[in-house]
Image (cartoon, rainbow, N blue to C red; front, side, top):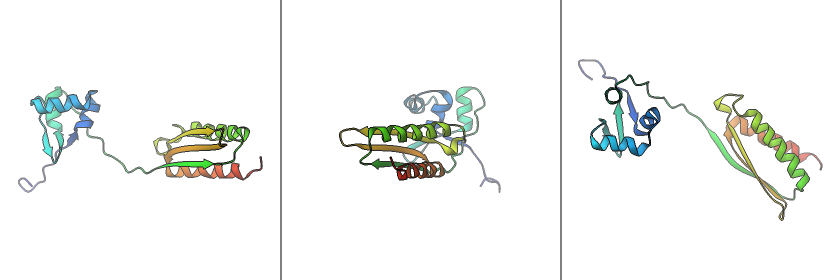
Amino acid sequence: MLGGQAAVREFYSVEQVAGLLDLHVKTVRGYVRDGRLRATRVGKQYRIAREDLEAFTGSAAPPPVRRTRYAEVSGIVQIDAISPEAMTRLTNTVMALALSRDGSQGSGDRLRVETVYDEERATLKIIVLGALDTTADLLKVINTLLAQPE
């Protein structure tokens, strides 16, 4: 507290500065080590004050991005004893669902899917990365499709 008021300063991480300036993180660290860009060391990391970034670039810096909480699922669904025809139908459906979700529902509904089929073992693996609700919806679809007779 200074004079009864809290001094509020905005700080950037080296990674944030690198992103803002379209530079490699190592380049920004080099600027800090060389003294060209003022920074404060906090533990093992550097923090760059907004004023110091503005002095370095000669222009106003955007406010630091505030991180928001995001939860994501990563999982593998393994399906044994699946024929090549059933694998193709299931894979096409799953990939179509993943593509229809990509960007259409906003960043909170991100969904990435990869499939791997081992024909010799008749095993399909579906690798899923996505938001909790979107992934749950996809898993319900997979479960429904697998419950149908071939």
